[in-house]
Image (cartoon, rainbow, N blue to C red; front, side):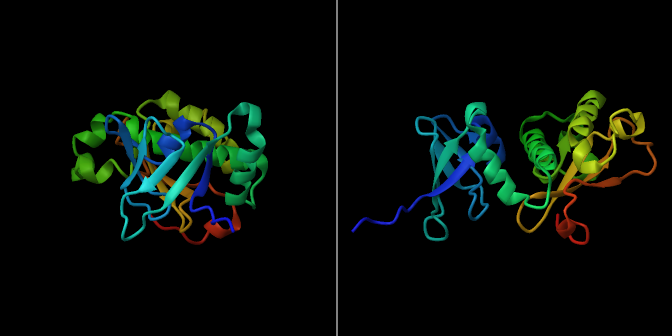
Amino acid sequence: MSKLNPYKKLVFQNIENALSDLHAEDKGRYFICNCPECNQHEAFMYKNNKHFIQCNRENHCGSRMILEFHEKGDMSVYEQEIEKHYPDLTTEQRQALDWSNRVFSYAKNYFKSEALDNGYRDLSKQTTRGFVADLQDEAIVQHVFQKAEPLLNKDYSNNSWMCKRNLIFPLYGEDHTLDRVLLRSSIDENLDPKEIQLIFNPSKETRDFFIA
């Protein structure tokens, strides 16, 4: 009688997306990542075996997962996985939401930010870096609005007042998917109002409830 497969499967478009989504930190021979099961930053992935990740919290989680990558030549499986996460959205909206989630995650971890590192609103770098993405430049914010138009049902990309809002505070639902973003500006701190909130997941479930 065969044993049950002890490994769960995670599907990503490519290794770059996997490292971004898992908040991977380069530790030389391996990466330390967020565990997809317990969400603690204690999972490891060796560089010579990027198809395997295991949580280091052996007595509390210890989950082991296989990573599969589907490049452009084999996108059907990847698109099916996205559809499972966002069943109430159109294909165009799912792709825009998935793209936005990856960009904000990548920016939080890899974009340099003088505003955040110098203590934004008296908050330390350690406090802000895990929660705020600084897109830094109006052109980058403009590009994000262009890509997110199917979600927002409005084109903000030609609105300079909106494109100056380079600080992105992503807010996630209970299922860890992106629901909304709060936007502020360090480019022009005199913008009024100081804060704008936009719904990035236009499904019914996200309109009345969100958690930071």
